[in-house]
Amino acid sequence: MTPEKRLDQLEPLVAEVSAQLDRITAQNRQLILVVGQVIETVSKQSDTIQFLLREVADIKTGQTQLQQDVAGLKTGQTQLQQDVAGLKTGQTDMGQKIDLILQMLQAGNGRS
Image (cartoon, rainbow, N blue to C red; front, top):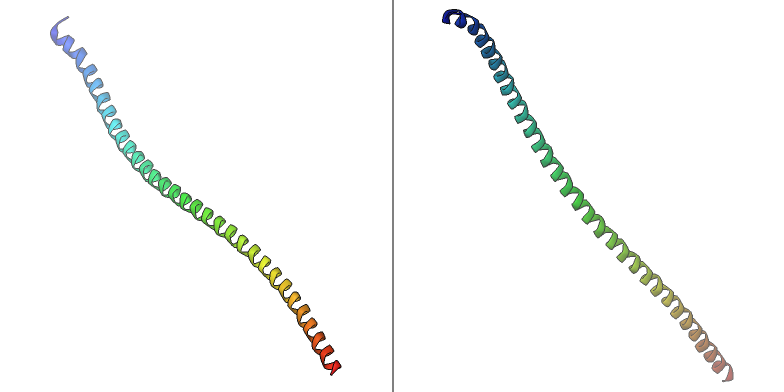
């Protein structure tokens, strides 16, 4: 085979391989663009997730504080109830003493 015939046989193959390489290169460029967009989207989603996790942590902290405050209020309420019961007992005792004093005064007035 002559060199010219060989060149005629190789030329279409080289052209076909070159065209395929051009298509592959174009597809790779598109793929790189898509991957870049995916990376950007994932980064934004990651930022959003981090924000939400911080908000959830803040909410949990607030919830814990509220639970502590409610426990404090319950303790205060119990103390108030005990104080009111003590006042009622004191009022009853004072009423009995006043009654006793009145009885003594009336008994003293009746003797004179």
